[in-house]
Length: 255
Image 1 (cartoon, rainbow, N blue to C red):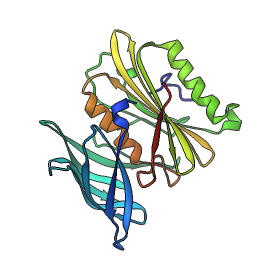
Image 2: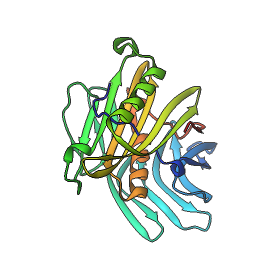
Image 3: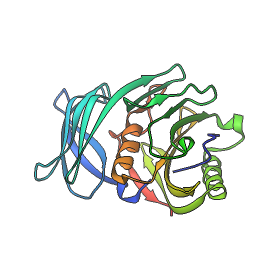
């Protein structure tokens, strides 16, 4: 089980908009995009071999730009620009791939930490006084080896957070898609005189429990929400997408 001792997703972040794109063969493709807000949006982009490709842009119904950048084979390439109200956010994305089966988009300035027992660990610059509370961690566990079912693993992960942390807020969802289900949780916790936001995704991919945790200071909420989900849709395990926006996503609150 992931040793970050936390589990993690903000309710308004799970607003899903349905978009129609045009694939290379001109057939309409259904695409679901996770956004901050309830306004209708327009996406311009192409899908090739069930993966995003080329220039993409997301705009409001009035034509106000929300995000734009370039995809290649389902991963973001280089600079993407995001617009929140009057704030402009630039994220320079890089592709990282390892021998453990992980292929993922990460911000260019994030640092990969070699970790023998986990699939991936990364850290980043922060204003926090305690650097250990800031991380992205991906674990992979075979149920028969850890003696837990997928459902039991989710319950135990949440229980550990509640026992080890001072909880300010907790929001949990189950996502149903393509005959599968995933767990999302977001905790706001107090730890060592700091308020942290901790996100968690748990899914079952190719018989392996994939546990993704992201922890950071509870500030710049829109940016942190955006970042976590952009990382999720740009993450693959052994060629399988962690969350596939080309499939119907049904979110069920379990709070």
